[in-house]
Length: 262
Image (tube, rainbow, N blue to C red):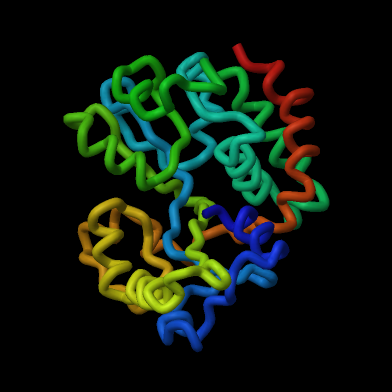
């Protein structure tokens, strides 16, 4: 489950803490996979990417600023706030434009998204953004890497995926251990296995979610399609803190961003 949901479950006393007493693999997790006040730990990393239609865009867009390109008026699709795609893209834009603490002030990100808005055909792509890019309804979109890579594989070259040079944010799925569960011993064995370098690498190869275990050995062709080689470009996000300002960011979107779309 998502970090913020895991935090709620932890606060309600539903989970046992996953630490080195449960599995030695916890010691090898990336710092991004462990959270203050959360009993669970990260089991997979996903990240935001740009996806583009190769018939419409011949050169891979290497920057998030491609979303502002006036040549793409009416040809961009992405989910708006309160969805985490919209909020996450705003956090990235805020970081790119000098923001230092989006929880206190995200104006730079909101202003940047206001520049993107005139290009957006839809803030609510149906059934989701990936087929809209593949079929050419839009030329450029924002998506999650794992789903993007799978859809790119099935697109017969119509869609490609880019991790922009400015970096990205992680969406972190957590693994949690139910307190007093009827199969506690088996659950602990599963946690140990799921966090092992081997299992993490296998899951990455199958689904393109990046491993949370830093000792996972991922083949070069797979790592090129995940955030594994770009962990130094990950923009840190305080997901627990974000939950406190998410409504305000959404209101800013509704007043300052969405009305500017076509």
